[in-house]
Image 1: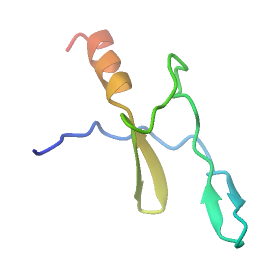
Image 2: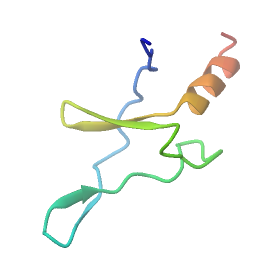
Image 3: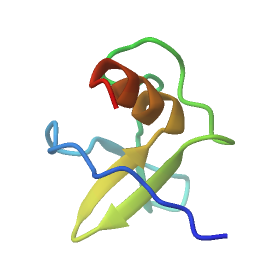
Image 4: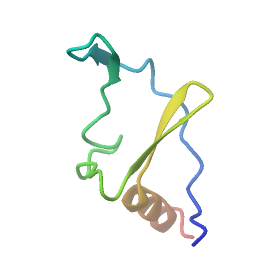
Length: 71
């Protein structure tokens, strides 16, 4: 199955992180998308690292964007 992902949004800012018990950095990802309409569930959203940036792909937000754009 070839999954088409929406184009990533522009970056919001620097990624926040904390260190685990071994001193390794761990990224802190948001619990809600930009619009704040729902929580980001790990079973439906994907965090993708590309060119030093983290992009969160959310099918629910992509579908809502299509509906509001009339497409």
